[in-house]
Image (cartoon, rainbow, N blue to C red; front, side, top):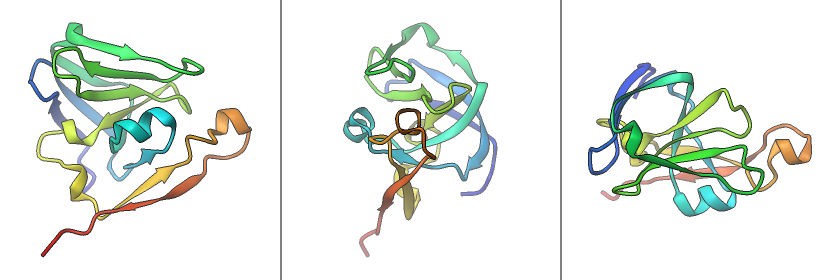
Length: 140
């Protein structure tokens, strides 16, 4: 899976289409264990602010904020798929859902770091912590 920086992507129904310029290709994969991300289950990669160019459907996106309201989670209002989020830890970064990137699946990664969003650094004043590692082992 390399470090290619530009990826085309879309939501499930195709109403939202975009090109994401990833900060470190697919090397920044992660999940989060906060209450929302735990339920959503997306694997994300980083893109700088301005690193997502919408080709169509930006007006179809809606967003959700909770708790402090700092993070903004964007999803298609038609099919409900979360395409990206503006991160709480660094509002100048987006987290792009890898499942929305053309030719990429969350199951392409044998291991995905899971960040401790329950004990978020903005709440604890401490450094970002790893909560664990999610592993995928394909059946033979």
